[in-house]
Length: 204
Image 1 (cartoon, rainbow, N blue to C red):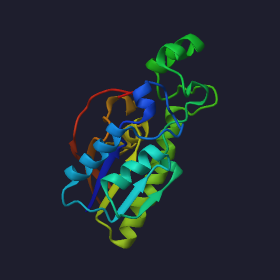
Image 2: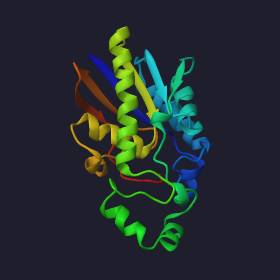
Image 3: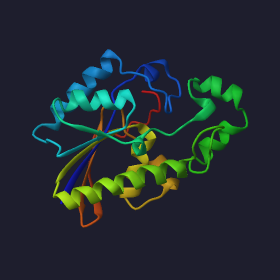
Image 4: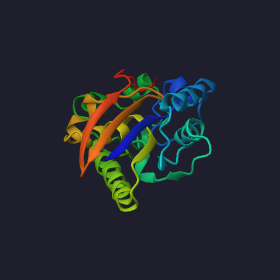
């Protein structure tokens, strides 16, 4: 059995400013750093044999603070959704700049693709392919504990996949800053054991 814990990064400067970050590389706030340390305390005796992270600093620093001294493997497959021309905008600014696109996004997150960005299906495939590579590596090496530190929609996409869904099901899942979800994986079949909260907040 593989125990897989998904951990979202702590509060970032972009979260605090309430902007669409996407793949912008914005650091943690001081609150975000404390949230990451607290996540480490909540991990208890869980010491990952494989610690994975998005390469963006808000995820990487969260991994460092939650698991000090552990080797971190970064992979661009775990980046947040690329939001193209929406990145750096607040919600009102995005609605003003893309008045015809924003309603479509809320109705169909799977197919919606902002100018210069990725669709929900793109993220679902990208994160799934990355995860499968590391699950195969864990099986090969006999690893039983994996921690993955990533982002809101990236993790929601992985949660949808592991529960048998597709990109269409991603809006069902949410995870707050520095919150965790735990899966047990048996012979490729995943069982969701715990989600620390289901607070839906893109910005928080």
